[in-house]
Amino acid sequence: MKIAILGMGVMGRGWITQFAMYGHTVHCHDVDKKTRETTVDYCARLSEKSARRLKIDDPEIAAKTRQNIVVHDDRSQFVDAAKGCDIFFEIIVEDLNLKCRVLGEIVPQLPERVVFWSNTSSLDIDVLARAAGRPQRSIVSHGMNPVPMMKGVEIVPGRETSPETVDMTRKLLLDMDKVPFAAPNIPGFWVNRLLIPQMLDAIRLLEIDQVSVKDGDDGLFTCLGHPQGTFKLCDFISTPTMLRVSLEMFESSNDPRLYPPRMLARMVKNGEYGAATGKGFYDWSDPKNPVARSMDEYKIATVEQLLETTK
Ligand SMILES: NC(=O)c1ccc[n+]([C@@H]2O[C@H](COP(=O)([O-])OP(=O)(O)OC[C@H]3O[C@@H](n4cnc5c(N)ncnc54)[C@H](O)[C@@H]3O)[C@@H](O)[C@H]2O)c1
Image 1 (cartoon, protein in one colour):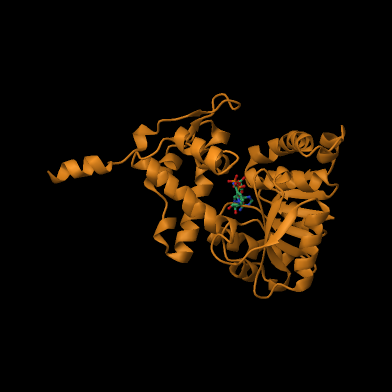
Image 2 (image 1 turned 180 degrees about the vertical axis):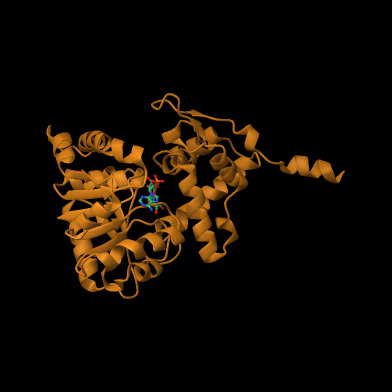
């Protein structure tokens, strides 16, 4: 198949690798020049790492992945290429207004047969589908990071999504050894509806000095079998994406648990984005041995300190 991918960040690169590894041709574009220049090398490396993890024995995997990726510097050339694709896949930042604007500019130019996928973590597919102007051929296909290594993919049809769109989405994912599962069209769908409030609670407890980064993650790792713990996961997701997702989920639900803690917003303001930028809840100077930070500079008054003020 031919896939057009808009947005080549953390998740865009994951999906580009996924499709390219499995022999599909991927046309892609991102507004950021550096991202466009570094993506093919990144995806080739990710395909090798993923093949090792998934026990795919193919010494040519990196070369094949490279061969299947076409990066377009110019957006109008990308749109022309997308006209000949089977799927237009939107993977830009989690901002409803931006997504709707960009979808409204691009998708109506594509032939009616092109199916629109979004990788949104939390946004209403009906709103995105309306912006794209083809509700019967619109669906959320929400992969997890790193996409080629994480089998689960949430499938969220909208009110008007046709059974054919759901079927082709499932089939394509199954053909790439993914595990698609149906999720409801509510803020955060299934996975993030449960996960995001829990992660924000963890940050709030850290902020009032009730837990440390290391103890918190050790506890979840050893007691609940989490692969890394909540703070490390946040560093992989990136703090800006966590902030955007929680703000979008708060806006659409008014649930106070989804309002982002100040610590998260302040980390974003200070450029502490997580693993990719070297600093988040962990210091990633040595990416193989991240060191849990004290986060003291971000803590707000503890219960004891507040009680002091009443005396
Ligand atoms: N990070 C995660 O773990 C994760 C997991 C699942 C889903 N998601 C979702 O995937 C989507 C992308 O998230 P991400 O983590 O890859 O974010 P990211 O910030 O790493 O990447 C987003 C990319 O979009 C590009 N972009 C922004 N506006 C654009 C435009 N108008 N045209 C083209 N490119 C544009 C940016 O330059 C950037 O490279 C979001 O909807 C997010 O909620 C993220």
